[in-house]
Length: 167
Image (cartoon, rainbow, N blue to C red):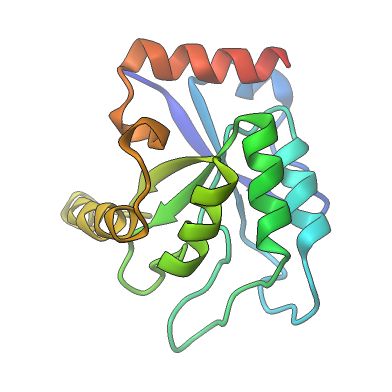
């Protein structure tokens, strides 16, 4: 079993939990949950989050929700390039109202070579079926299987996360 958490990160890229607690977890998914209606470029926010040593995966990156919130904008090539350089992952959130990242952005992520995590943003067991949307987006964007965390063996995944913490 892999213990993980969705960590709330503020616009400065800092988490809302202490490092000691996070270090006992297998994976930490860092997500923005505030200031999600900003219209100006948020690249620096994303870069700060990726540089946070506690975070291995940047979750529901844009923070969009269809017919409710447009989501944040950034220089996505720069964000994905840093994720690739740091060997971190970005999430495809398959929740139907989010479907974040879009296939176009996933193609940019593929060119950068960053890792991808398939997620559902589920809040109950019945919503786990949203994984199909994440997988469909990855297939549509041509993301290679070896770049997707969900296809790693558990020991490989934990070794990857542990290595990131040490860098």
